Amino acid sequence: MRIEKKKRKTTPWPIVRSCNSETDQETYEKLSSIARDYRNLEPAISRQDLFGPLVNPGWESGPTIYFEDHRVVDLIPESSAQSYEYRMLGLAGDEDFFLTSLRRDRNFEQSLSDSGLGRPNIIRLNRKDDETLAQTAYNNSALIERLAEAAKIAGVINIVPYQSSPDVWHLAKTIADKSQTPVKVAGSLPVMTLCANDKIWFAGLVRRIHGDRAIPVTQGLTSKAAVMQNVLDLAQNHKHLVLKLPASAGGMGNIRLSSEIIQNISKDALYSYISDLLGLKDWHTGEPLLVGVWDSHVIDSPSVQIWVPKLEFGLPVIEGVFEQIVAGEQGTFVGARRAQYSLELTKKICREAFDISFCLQQMGYYGRLSLDTVLIQRDDLPPIIHWIEANARWGGVSIPMTVANRFQSEYPSHSPYVFQRYLNEETELDIEKILNDNGLQTLSSDGDKGYIYLLPKSGNVKLVTLVGLSAKKINAIQKEINANLN
Image 1: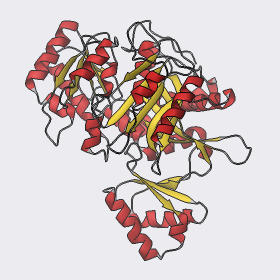
Image 2 (image 1 turned 45 degrees about the vertical axis):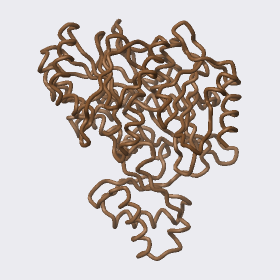
Image 3 (image 1 turned 90 degrees about the vertical axis):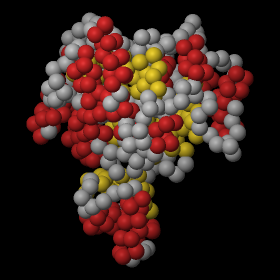
């Protein structure tokens, strides 16, 4: 299928294709048919008139409002939301706006400006405990006046949120009503975003596209009795099971279960055990819950980073397949690097990811997307790909990757390498010394090799992105970091 691309800039940062993944006409028609079924079932996923004629998905050249607010995601604690509020600052440029509720860290802000990433207008908001950043923004009349004035001067204003939520679109409508100028949101309509982030909905979509073999054994249930029976049935044939709150992120809503424990306690004890675990996740009967198998023989957990443009601007762009580096029993994300799989496996991952993202695009999806998978390998057989979830938001790989693209707009074979750790008083790691000892310096506007902090050094999360390094150099640095941590 050929889609004519309009010749104009459609994002404020480079979109860097890492592989060409298109498919045959028959598959395009199948995917388009699936998308039509979903649109007919839920028309609100693609209705663009819900927020008035001036507010639409997209981006146009002009001032852009950025903010990263994890409070829109289920189960995210306030401490975590605060830890990441500064992370998207590296995407902003001159004349843009960046909103935060944190106390300003001038040293961090200056470090990003010195690297050549730009000097946006940074605005601290006095957020109430029960508000999202978008709510605080649209309730602040002085801020709305300022943003509306910027919109009137430029003829348009854009919003790039961490996740496209109803509050984000309310903010967009508030600015549009005040300025009477177009407001573009670089993300899908809220219902589309909600669907894509739902693990049960996503599993059903992948099943329609690639069949049962492409996902773990998975079922969506709403009653505790059905959950119990499903757990008992699955425990007969599988070693580990999982319960997931479908809209949670980062493993926060996951409960892993051992089939050995399930088979060796009474039904009453099992009922109490699972009830207590679900209570800790604030789940109640009547709400959806994913019940499934936790895959065994997993050799890796790649994440595919994708930019999904509006239909008139072309097909989805796969920007990279990344190996996610995780630690601990819960699989906490601690970093990422470009995966180094065989060409055949990489092409297979990209082709399947393209089909999923194309189908989403046909439904009306637009913006940043990452698709998480696991690779399963038994004996010497080829790896099996299981698609786990979609992240219809920016994240721990896409933000560092996009910042790296601002320094290297031509596709680099191994860049970037992402290092992230929660550090406490018991953890002694001088990451900067390790990098300097390996001949690296902070990135600057006239360089394309080095490192950059994407969160303040004063925070409890260290997030560093390395750009322009060979696989050999990344391997050596990763080995030294792990040795120091251990």
